[in-house]
Length: 260
Image (tube, rainbow, N blue to C red; front, top):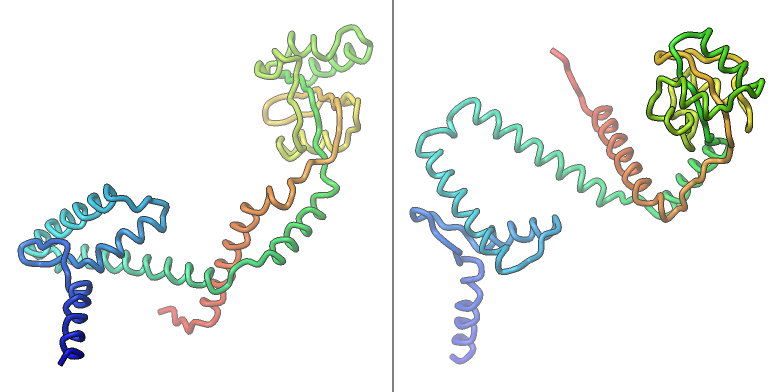
């Protein structure tokens, strides 16, 4: 008898956890389980599980159910446009869940990250960055005259840039462009820079879509490559996205698709 009473007591304590509603709206309950799931989702996204959050979630769920009941009463669930949007939303949720599961089941390992880091670092080993000055003018003749004057030391590069460059941003600083790889610039400019050495002044003006450039290479150095720890977050995200792209390709390859 005591054993039966104990089991009955245990059931009476356990069942409300599953059956309890946090609120009802027009007789329709909002279960504790769904409430807890909502809170857990927000916490997983970075929210703090506080009494204030729980109050907000409860009110949000009530507001939603009130609106949903009104929409259903109006028969909106039968509207073809609503049905299509609902289907698309459901598909999006399923796709996100599938991708998340794939990443969880196929995490990027530390070894894979290090291997990719070493590969990219080796590829970038020969890359250089340049400390440059330039003077931009509208016509070739003017650019040639400036090159002659600078080489003859009739004027300095900085003075010519301040006086004649139509690139007012760098011109006021003596044509200073600062440090950067050649790829920061348009192709014609970049190609000219890569053919020059430290201390060089362009022998001929360089034409781009902006006009005619006189270029001076003040210094050259290897591009500083970030450490593994610095690059790791970005590298991991890149590899995760690549893994997802490869997974999607494999799904398409294995699917039997008949275009009609």
